[in-house]
Length: 201
Image 1: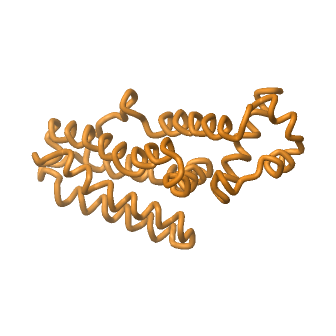
Image 2: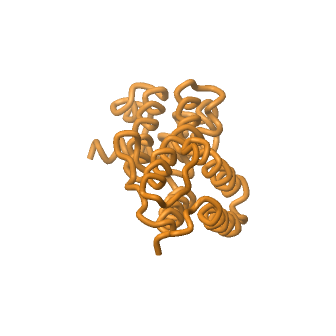
Protein backbone atom coordinates (compact mmCIF):
# COMPACT_ATOMS: atom_id res chain seq x y z
CA UNK A 1 0.00 0.00 0.00
CA UNK A 2 2.82 2.40 0.85
CA UNK A 3 4.46 1.65 -2.49
CA UNK A 4 1.19 2.35 -4.29
CA UNK A 5 0.88 5.69 -2.48
CA UNK A 6 4.45 6.63 -3.38
CA UNK A 7 3.77 5.82 -7.03
CA UNK A 8 0.51 7.80 -6.97
CA UNK A 9 2.38 10.80 -5.56
CA UNK A 10 4.97 10.56 -8.35
CA UNK A 11 2.28 10.18 -11.02
CA UNK A 12 0.44 13.26 -9.81
CA UNK A 13 3.68 15.21 -9.37
CA UNK A 14 4.63 14.44 -12.96
CA UNK A 15 1.24 15.64 -14.16
CA UNK A 16 1.43 18.89 -12.19
CA UNK A 17 5.14 19.58 -12.79
CA UNK A 18 4.66 19.09 -16.54
CA UNK A 19 1.81 21.64 -16.53
CA UNK A 20 2.90 24.21 -13.94
CA UNK A 21 6.61 23.57 -13.46
CA UNK A 22 8.36 22.80 -10.18
CA UNK A 23 7.94 26.25 -8.65
CA UNK A 24 4.31 26.50 -9.74
CA UNK A 25 3.36 23.21 -8.09
CA UNK A 26 2.05 23.55 -4.56
CA UNK A 27 2.51 20.57 -2.21
CA UNK A 28 -0.83 21.21 -0.50
CA UNK A 29 -2.66 21.16 -3.85
CA UNK A 30 -0.70 18.11 -4.98
CA UNK A 31 -1.60 16.09 -1.88
CA UNK A 32 -5.20 17.30 -1.85
CA UNK A 33 -5.64 16.11 -5.44
CA UNK A 34 -4.69 12.63 -4.18
CA UNK A 35 -6.99 12.78 -1.16
CA UNK A 36 -4.02 13.07 1.18
CA UNK A 37 -2.88 15.64 3.71
CA UNK A 38 0.64 17.11 3.74
CA UNK A 39 1.65 15.17 6.84
CA UNK A 40 0.83 11.83 5.18
CA UNK A 41 2.79 12.82 2.06
CA UNK A 42 5.84 13.59 4.19
CA UNK A 43 5.79 10.00 5.43
CA UNK A 44 6.76 9.00 1.89
CA UNK A 45 8.84 11.96 0.71
CA UNK A 46 10.61 14.47 2.94
CA UNK A 47 10.29 17.40 0.56
CA UNK A 48 9.18 18.54 -2.86
CA UNK A 49 12.84 18.28 -3.92
CA UNK A 50 12.87 14.59 -2.95
CA UNK A 51 9.72 14.03 -5.01
CA UNK A 52 11.45 15.81 -7.91
CA UNK A 53 14.58 13.66 -7.75
CA UNK A 54 12.61 10.44 -7.32
CA UNK A 55 10.53 11.40 -10.33
CA UNK A 56 13.64 11.97 -12.46
CA UNK A 57 15.10 8.63 -11.29
CA UNK A 58 11.93 6.86 -12.32
CA UNK A 59 11.85 8.67 -15.66
CA UNK A 60 15.42 7.59 -16.47
CA UNK A 61 14.63 3.93 -15.74
CA UNK A 62 11.36 4.11 -17.69
CA UNK A 63 13.00 5.71 -20.71
CA UNK A 64 15.97 3.31 -20.74
CA UNK A 65 13.66 0.31 -20.57
CA UNK A 66 11.73 1.44 -23.65
CA UNK A 67 14.49 2.96 -25.81
CA UNK A 68 17.69 1.41 -24.57
CA UNK A 69 20.70 3.13 -23.08
CA UNK A 70 24.49 3.10 -23.33
CA UNK A 71 24.38 -0.16 -21.36
CA UNK A 72 21.35 -1.57 -23.20
CA UNK A 73 21.60 -0.58 -26.86
CA UNK A 74 18.96 -1.75 -29.37
CA UNK A 75 19.90 -4.39 -31.94
CA UNK A 76 21.40 -3.15 -35.20
CA UNK A 77 18.83 -3.60 -38.01
CA UNK A 78 19.50 -6.34 -40.56
CA UNK A 79 17.78 -4.51 -43.41
CA UNK A 80 17.18 -0.91 -44.42
CA UNK A 81 13.44 -1.37 -44.02
CA UNK A 82 14.04 -2.43 -40.41
CA UNK A 83 15.68 0.95 -39.74
CA UNK A 84 12.48 2.76 -40.69
CA UNK A 85 10.32 0.26 -38.79
CA UNK A 86 12.47 0.63 -35.65
CA UNK A 87 12.40 4.42 -35.96
CA UNK A 88 8.62 4.48 -36.25
CA UNK A 89 8.21 2.19 -33.22
CA UNK A 90 10.35 4.58 -31.17
CA UNK A 91 8.41 7.59 -32.48
CA UNK A 92 5.08 5.96 -31.68
CA UNK A 93 6.11 5.38 -28.06
CA UNK A 94 7.63 8.86 -27.79
CA UNK A 95 4.52 10.60 -29.06
CA UNK A 96 1.78 8.45 -27.51
CA UNK A 97 3.17 7.29 -24.15
CA UNK A 98 1.58 9.81 -21.78
CA UNK A 99 4.32 9.48 -19.16
CA UNK A 100 7.06 10.14 -21.72
CA UNK A 101 5.16 13.10 -23.19
CA UNK A 102 4.71 14.67 -19.74
CA UNK A 103 8.37 14.03 -18.90
CA UNK A 104 9.48 15.74 -22.10
CA UNK A 105 7.31 18.76 -21.26
CA UNK A 106 8.65 18.79 -17.70
CA UNK A 107 12.27 18.78 -18.93
CA UNK A 108 11.50 21.50 -21.47
CA UNK A 109 10.16 23.73 -18.67
CA UNK A 110 12.69 22.90 -15.96
CA UNK A 111 15.93 22.77 -17.99
CA UNK A 112 16.39 26.48 -17.29
CA UNK A 113 15.96 26.11 -13.52
CA UNK A 114 17.47 22.80 -12.53
CA UNK A 115 20.92 21.46 -13.44
CA UNK A 116 19.84 17.83 -13.46
CA UNK A 117 16.87 18.61 -15.70
CA UNK A 118 19.23 20.51 -18.02
CA UNK A 119 21.57 17.53 -18.30
CA UNK A 120 18.69 15.12 -18.92
CA UNK A 121 17.13 17.41 -21.52
CA UNK A 122 20.44 17.57 -23.39
CA UNK A 123 20.79 13.79 -23.21
CA UNK A 124 17.25 12.91 -24.26
CA UNK A 125 16.75 15.66 -26.82
CA UNK A 126 20.20 15.51 -28.42
CA UNK A 127 23.28 13.59 -27.26
CA UNK A 128 21.63 10.32 -26.23
CA UNK A 129 19.83 9.97 -29.55
CA UNK A 130 22.97 10.85 -31.49
CA UNK A 131 25.02 8.29 -29.56
CA UNK A 132 22.41 5.57 -30.04
CA UNK A 133 22.12 6.12 -33.78
CA UNK A 134 25.88 6.48 -34.18
CA UNK A 135 26.11 2.93 -32.85
CA UNK A 136 23.26 1.76 -35.10
CA UNK A 137 24.64 3.39 -38.25
CA UNK A 138 28.17 2.14 -37.59
CA UNK A 139 26.76 -1.38 -37.29
CA UNK A 140 24.71 -0.98 -40.47
CA UNK A 141 27.80 0.22 -42.36
CA UNK A 142 29.70 -2.85 -41.18
CA UNK A 143 26.82 -5.01 -42.47
CA UNK A 144 27.05 -3.26 -45.84
CA UNK A 145 23.58 -1.73 -45.53
CA UNK A 146 24.65 1.93 -45.47
CA UNK A 147 27.39 3.51 -47.54
CA UNK A 148 30.49 4.35 -45.57
CA UNK A 149 30.33 7.79 -44.02
CA UNK A 150 30.90 9.39 -40.63
CA UNK A 151 28.32 7.54 -38.50
CA UNK A 152 28.19 10.33 -35.90
CA UNK A 153 27.43 12.99 -38.52
CA UNK A 154 24.80 10.74 -40.10
CA UNK A 155 23.25 10.14 -36.68
CA UNK A 156 23.05 13.87 -36.01
CA UNK A 157 21.55 14.52 -39.46
CA UNK A 158 18.99 11.73 -38.91
CA UNK A 159 17.86 12.50 -35.37
CA UNK A 160 17.72 16.32 -35.42
CA UNK A 161 14.68 16.71 -37.73
CA UNK A 162 12.89 13.79 -36.05
CA UNK A 163 13.41 15.37 -32.63
CA UNK A 164 12.15 18.73 -33.95
CA UNK A 165 8.96 17.12 -35.28
CA UNK A 166 8.36 15.33 -31.97
CA UNK A 167 8.57 18.67 -30.14
CA UNK A 168 6.08 20.04 -32.67
CA UNK A 169 3.65 17.31 -31.58
CA UNK A 170 4.00 18.56 -27.98
CA UNK A 171 3.36 22.19 -28.93
CA UNK A 172 0.59 21.54 -31.47
CA UNK A 173 -1.01 18.13 -30.83
CA UNK A 174 -3.42 18.60 -33.75
CA UNK A 175 -0.41 18.27 -36.08
CA UNK A 176 0.71 14.90 -34.64
CA UNK A 177 -0.54 12.73 -37.51
CA UNK A 178 1.11 14.97 -40.11
CA UNK A 179 4.36 15.07 -38.12
CA UNK A 180 4.47 11.27 -37.86
CA UNK A 181 3.89 11.03 -41.63
CA UNK A 182 6.74 13.47 -42.21
CA UNK A 183 9.05 11.42 -39.98
CA UNK A 184 8.25 8.24 -41.92
CA UNK A 185 8.80 9.99 -45.25
CA UNK A 186 12.09 11.42 -43.97
CA UNK A 187 13.31 8.00 -42.77
CA UNK A 188 12.46 6.46 -46.15
CA UNK A 189 14.25 9.33 -47.91
CA UNK A 190 17.31 8.78 -45.71
CA UNK A 191 17.32 5.08 -46.62
CA UNK A 192 17.18 5.92 -50.32
CA UNK A 193 19.94 8.51 -49.97
CA UNK A 194 22.39 6.52 -47.84
CA UNK A 195 21.45 2.87 -48.36
CA UNK A 196 23.64 0.63 -50.43
CA UNK A 197 22.18 -0.34 -53.79
CA UNK A 198 22.27 -4.01 -52.80
CA UNK A 199 19.80 -3.33 -49.98
CA UNK A 200 18.25 -6.27 -48.19
CA UNK A 201 14.60 -6.85 -48.78
